Length: 98
Picture (cartoon, rainbow, N blue to C red):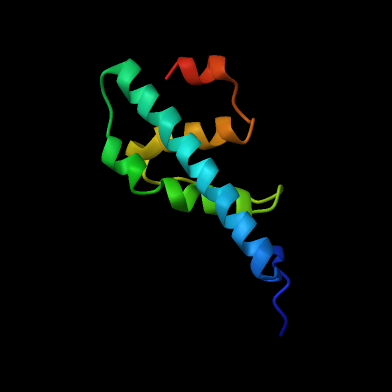
């Protein structure tokens, strides 16, 4: 059996560059949802912080366009919204309604 997942077939330099890009996405996602919580004066920050890295990895390094993701951790929805904004699925106007 061969592993055909694209993120597993990279050399060392490519993996380092990919890790750096993922770290940039994580920082941007965290910054966005922390701003959302601050603006709302409410939220479950810990829930979002605890899954930000996993969400970024899944969206930008693992999932394909036709994959479906279900977040059952409802208190972390700000992290999901931030991730979707980072991926240009949601607009800044939609995020402002959080």
